[in-house]
Image 1 (cartoon, rainbow, N blue to C red):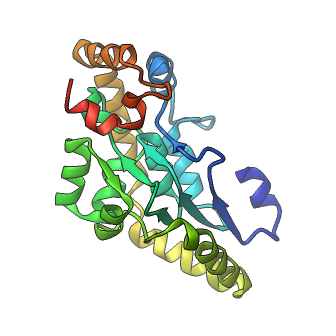
Image 2 (cartoon, rainbow, N blue to C red):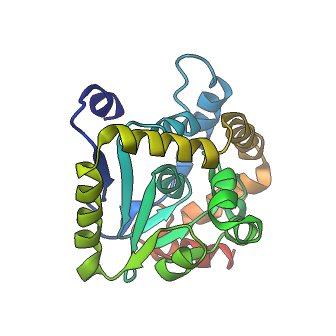
Length: 236
């Protein structure tokens, strides 16, 4: 998709929504941690396919990117949200969480760096170390989402904003986005250091035991464990 929109000069704004009313992206597939670790160990070259590289490319894409959160976004799903230029959330359904520490691993694709910049050091500590879900109002309060809106107003608000930006002179929008990124995006090297920590903790037996317990309790199924991941982590 990024290849297509870079090649097609007419795309000014991209809005991401989920077709699933319960989930935006819940998290990575925890049964494939060994595979992700193997990929991460070879990242950094010209064919780098790591999540942190993908999300950096998303942040730097030519069009403006807006995420509409109408369900759950956790882990790497939340990191995709942070990589977008703006985020708007449903007050009825949106949840954002970084469950990695509670699971026994580490955010792999920029959450540490992005949350410190979006919400500040103390709030980043609470979100990442606490591994609890944020609802839309709390996410708005600490700056993780631009605005929380009821479902009946959410899409129309985002559409008006997207259409407004799309009508402005493209050169001015692109320059403004580039300079805001220069001031606000974390250095690539810092995100890569964080991603390397995932490889370390992914091999920790204690983390593997917690992942096993979560899977046995119904994680990655439409169960309470998946729907209330943050709460369940505190019960293990």
